[in-house]
Image 1 (cartoon, rainbow over the protein chains, first blue to last red):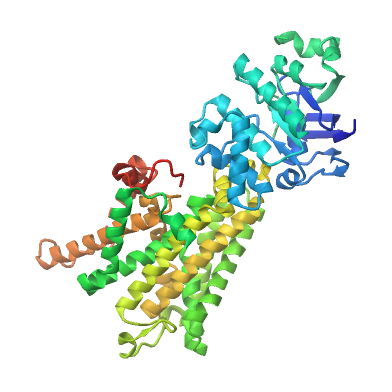
Image 2 (image 1 turned 180 degrees about the horizontal axis):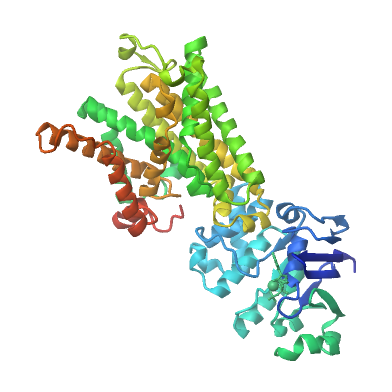
Length: 241
Length: 348
Ligand SMILES: Nc1ncnc2c1ncn2[C@@H]1O[C@H](COP(=O)(O)OP(=O)(O)OP(=O)(O)O)[C@@H](O)[C@H]1O
Ligand SMILES: [Mg+2]
């Protein structure tokens, strides 16, 4: 299947610290791929490069063969990438519905249409009961759901999810997994997710990329990854598989 | 009409009755209040207009202006000059006046947002430019420099009602500024519920997250500054033709800029009605203090020679401190909740 996202030889340093070193990654259209690795491996940094928060020092990012390297975040959003933040960034003085409406306005001609679209996203993430609550008052799991709902409401072709299942109970994780799979199946969305919860990674992803100290150390389907000695040593060794 | 319906929708019965009664009282004010009460009420609406303009920037979009007198002053001088120099009536002159204020806003916004690291930079630029323009006018003899710029008023003017040239009775000025302040309220209500309002609030709460959701942050910040500056410019045109005299030290004084913020802070930054509500508390209170001091001096309770000019500001400052400490969201949301003025399920 054709690749929707192509990250090629991306490097990024912060004041001498190599956060990403020559990382390449492809995500197949309508696929669900995972990015894993220990803390500080550079996963979020790669998301930030893809989403345009900062340009890479070297390498390129292509979406559907269009070069989007170095474009600004709002322009990347318009080109079809929706992202969540690992540390949730809700619009805290706005209600949950208003939060998602901001995102839905991207693809809507009127505020009313955006609100309708936003309501649909809230339903999908089971947040509809919280619609009129201020985002500041949400619990952590609900904030994570709001992040996903907002990213989804921008109408992306590719969804970047940064640890949206961290802190969720196992039953909630299973619900999120089901929601994401349903999304992909029903809307043809492509998903790239960063996740520490292996239960979710194994259940969802068709392809896994492993980062360690900014380098890609392994790549492949879940069954191969869990047996890769390099991965076991650096990552799975100190985690619950 | 739809926007008016929208406007009254979230009011609960108590809010409708109280608001309606208050509005009627103000509408009939020329019939029950003396000329002094009229002057105070005119000032209240004038400051409420500027307050709403300031609140649009900070409360809606999260942009702090501490030089708002700049936009008022530019509006005032432009319309006054065009009237005096080429006889352009202010009803037309308001366009270039607002235009210049908007341009100034865009210039400061562009410098502040395009090249700055933090929001403080923009706030500092607003005072810097207010000072800069004041000094320029101080030296511009064609604008009267420090001597002041005056508009001619004839005795006949004071008894006419000429909205084209903004010449007329105190009642005319009162109703005009009331209409402008309420018009600003309707405009703010409309904007807050439009795409602009959603984007502004998102930028205010978290600009980086807004950016990631496709919001062109720089552009929407510029819209906020432009609209806010334009509103302040309109207030300036009113000021010029109400006062008929403009002095740079008075018009661009930092005190004017501070004044623009206080009503909103007391009423509630980011709320729609807060700036008006806060001004209705602060301005009459300031007048009462001034009057009380005059009376005490008159009765020789305090030495008539004592200078107490700063007392009003001191008391305002004290009130602001109390509000910030105990009702940081402002008095209006609190009063609304207490008196159930607004339906709870309403969002704004
Ligand atoms: N904006 C930044 N400025 C400076 N250093 C940064 C920045 N972002 C990330 N880093 C550094 O880059 C390295 C990689 O961080 P990153 O957040 O990408 O890791 P991660 O794989 O997402 O880790 P975690 O699992 O803990 O979220 C870390 O050493 C981090 O301190
Ligand atoms: Mg991370």
